[in-house]
Image (cartoon, rainbow, N blue to C red; front, side, top):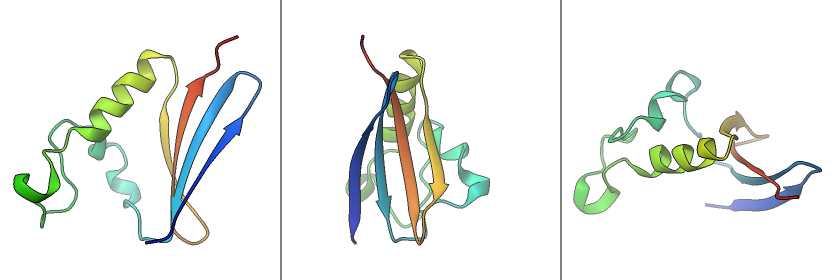
Length: 88
């Protein structure tokens, strides 16, 4: 899958943006995927797909720093933006 990554350097924050051309995460599931041990794809198991902690851990770290992770639809595809504070 073709994945694009870029960093946007703002005055007070740095955004890490990851986009692909896949279907993404259905909007109704955007909050649920951050729950510990939640796995969106039922076909995965612990041997091949992890235990569902990655997004929960990532969001906890980013929110600890006063920022957040956001999902949005790309054109086409899906976009994840990780907003991090910039040290000044």
